[in-house]
Structures are given as structure tokens and as C-alpha cells.
Amino acid sequence: MNRTSNLPPGGTVTLKHAQCGGKLQFCVALPKSPAILGAGCPEPLRVGNFATPVALSSSGKVTEHAPITVEITPGQPQTRQSGQSAFSIAFKKNGTASGYFALGITVVLGAKSISCSGKVSFTAKLA
Image: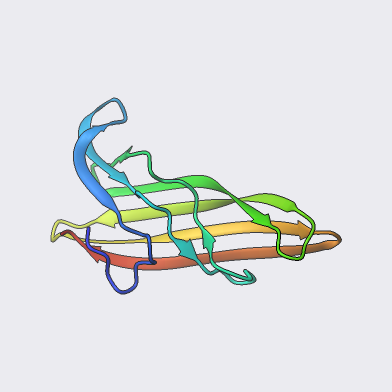
């Protein structure tokens, strides 16, 4: 798929006829996880790992969830917290696709808790 102006950097989507889910079918993967900026986030965070190909449903849609982990080090005691991210895409017969990346995480820095969440929608066209 070609990147379009609203697909986050690193958000190249791979769609190919391959072996996934135990059989030969159309499979979707995200070779590199993009970083998105969510509300309350001090900086963009990478969504989880979606590099393992998953089967595209007969309706042309797939939604996957993956954990994310953030390490905070600059000027802070080492803190590591986990959250969830999502990648969803729906292909249309005309060669276009639309979808989103989402994340939600809470980081605890000493006595302070920071919640961060975001969702970035995108459109793309088959190359």
C-alpha cells in the first residue's frame, strides 16, 4: 500500500496472498509500528507490534490489539508501564482502504499518574 498524507510515518501496510492463520489467503501486516501522539502524551508513542501477518476476513476487514510498553528515563526514576494499542483496516473493492491506529496507556511517575490515549484515522490506496 502506498502511504498517504494522513498515514503516520512508519505506517506502511502490507497486503499479500500468503500463508497466515494456517492457510493460504490474503494476509495483512504492519512491518514497522508508527508513532502517534495521543491526548496527555508528552511525546509520540509507538503502537504495538503488528508485524505478524493476520488473515483478512471475507468482508475485507481486520482489527488487531497488541500491548505497548513505555520506558521513561530522562530526569525521572526508571518507570515502565504497559498499555494497549490497536490497528484496524478495511479494504474496499476499488483499491482503497481506511482504518485507524489507537493507544491507551497510564504511566506512574512517583506519586503522579499520567494517562495518555489517542486515535489516528487514515486512508490509503493499493500500490
